[in-house]
Length: 221
Image (spheres, rainbow, N blue to C red):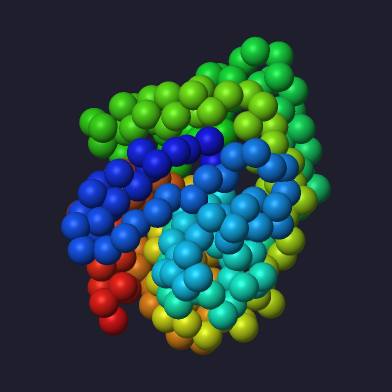
């Protein structure tokens, strides 16, 4: 959510040496189904699909809509469940603040540093997230928040996945903790689980080497 291609910059640089890599766009729509449809419209006929956080939620909808086009699936730092009433209500407050011109504060509250791995680089990494989010703007925050509020429960989708799947999370992620990834991996018939011990919610940036190794093994298996 509120990120751009910089979220996957280390992995894109490495993987694109031998593969065609395309970063999907999650902007322009306020429903997961519409975002997934836009991703599918821009994607090749068949492809391996990886997503992180909101991107992974969209990825679950993509494979639900077009299971014959997805050859492999990687779900990172995400949750297959729909919003609870409390979560939906909290999003309303954040959206109101974003529309009132307080987007930077909203972004810092949405992804607090406690959701990232501890260490000297944590504050700088949160700043990178905020910079991406400010570039996206308040309207995108509202649209993506609406999409998350209304997102469908995808437990049934995960049970029907029939392609090699990587489920990956960060040990320090309080937004989507490791136990949620363990639950997801149990739902998917052919899933492998990786928990990165030195990462939190933005695991591709926090542990670029560990996440790249896991993604490479997933692609090569």
